[in-house]
Amino acid sequence: MDLHEIHCLFKDSAHAGDRRRKSQLCIAGVSQIHNKQFGFKNGTALLGTLGPVARARVNQLWTDNPESAPSPSVRVAQRGVPGTKEMLQKLLEGLDPPPDTKIFVVDLTLNRWNEWGRCLWELQRDRLKSEGQGLDWKFVSYVMKGDDEATSGIDQAISWIEGRSFSEWWDDCPEAGPKTRSKSDFCEQKPTLDILVVSGGKLKIPTAVLDSLQGQGESLQMEVEQWNSNHDLKLLATITSQNTRAKEDDRTLCAPVFAEGDNHLNFKRLVSLESLTVMTQGEFEAHVVRLGCIRAMGCADLFVVAGDNFQLWLLNPAANEVTCDAFEIFGFNVASYTEKAAGIARAESKEAIPFLLERDTDLLCLPGPTGKSLFCTAELACFLAQKQGITELSIADHALTPLVEDGTGAPRPFRYKVTCQGKVTCFEPKPLAPSADLMDLRGSMFGAYYLRNFDKLPASSMCRTLWEVSMDHCTVRPLKPKFWLTCSVKIPPQTALKLG
Image (cartoon, rainbow, N blue to C red; front, side):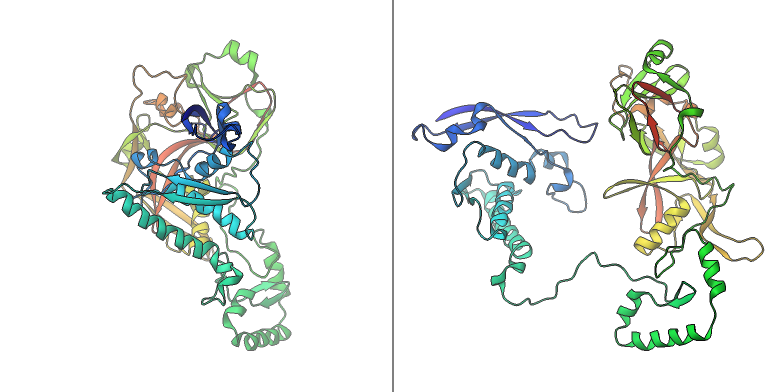
């Protein structure tokens, strides 16, 4: 058997903090029994490189406990199905096998993750869905006698592939016969909680409500039309048109309304650089002493530079303009959490960052499946009510009192008076190691540089320290603070922008 060294290349990660190697050495063995016309000897992979192939993502890996993320040992044991699939396809580059060629993949080290089997199912599914067009992939696995783990892995593999074939292919196959169950779209629009809404000066019943009433919907619709013919709703139509949050459709969404003086921050606004401190890169290098420098966590094109006197800068060294929306700049390292009285927490805010909200317009960061989103308390209450049906929101260490209109006593939707309840949670970062190089820190640790000087961090409408929170049923709980850019900016090429 001829052994060949192949360097497997990986695609670049979109995560700036990913420090994994970009290549891995693999050994390919090619049988000497076959002649020179043997297909794999002509493949481009045997020239020395394979790829680039996809890296494994955590959400694509199997885990022992579905309630938690895969452990480090579990992550090391898996390469990921997308990367495995791409490796097989890259091995065939340069071979040009004719359609319907049978390709056998033999797994001699079957384990419980069954990545080769799952990969081959995806390739087989593509062939099934294209009515037999393409390569005919086959999967074979051998088990050593007495290998109980591998034997259990086969049972798991068979069960997994059978379930996937029924759910992803057989259900839509013309040979499957009549459906025994109805199929519905999981993305159906949820019916509104409003029964009647005002639109164009008339009362209307939302379409979703009519559909849910089925046969009774027609009679109710006739009653509403009769009521409209007997009443004049021009006044209500005028009031509706004055509500800037109302939409031109069959329903009106209730949302918090902010007035001047409420300190509500629009983090999507574009900030002009005219009123800010801006330097060319040459001026910056001549006048600012670099004490630390990292790549911004949420924008890989920018660098965060800590200067003397605790100045903080965003530097664009590239030859093109960088436009960025609000993003997470850096974190504050690992820490311990303590509870302190609110007054003491305020007094000691130089050493620990307290979870202390003053009003319902203070910004919070809520992680989600597609990334992190910024909300103030009022907007978060509205979002949770509309998307998850949560109507009674509470915040750890704080009390929420609904606000009412002056004079009329009418409730102000999703607006609250926020009051601290005695003790609050404080985040006390661990100090950096004495040997730590501020020019080579991870973004998640950079904030620890300001330990015992957190009051020197900029806190303005442009940037500030925000708390990342989680939802525990109906309660908002603090996770950790992060430093954010809370606006959109356009930074010219080779320019430094002072934060503050």
